[in-house]
Image (tube, rainbow, N blue to C red; front, side, top):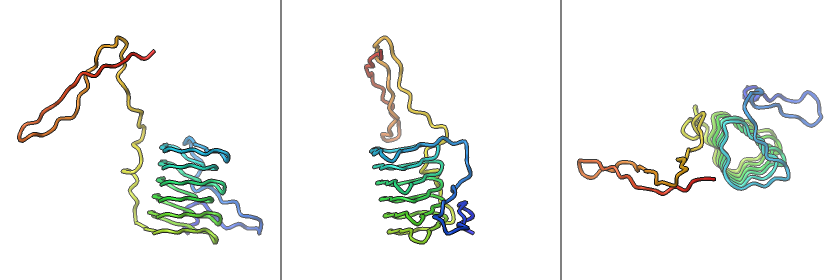
Length: 183
């Protein structure tokens, strides 16, 4: 039954199994990190991620994350569904996780559903919950980069800071910040 949730079925022949996708094909964009790539930083996307190389840092994705057999993640992972065929050194938070026969996870799992194929390896605490609330962990839908004030004259732009409580009254502080014109 769980295999059906992930779209995985047992192979009908003795040839090496080819796992099917955890989710049906969608219109989400896909970020692919190739076999020869090694990237350090953090990745946040509303689409899917396919990691074939090495990524050092955290990944947050609204879609499906696939760590291929040649892929290695050294960091935490948050996503809707995760398929591990390679190596993950970090914690995974997701609704559904599949650790396939070549997959290795060295970290904790916080999940709703789990599939492990024979040979798949997990070293860490597995916490299964009835519902994993990813809404607080994923970026809001349609999030745009923070806009910076545009200035062409070089005149100072007023920058406001949030009000702070002091006793019964509140104070609001504004300061002049010089902005250089971008050319």
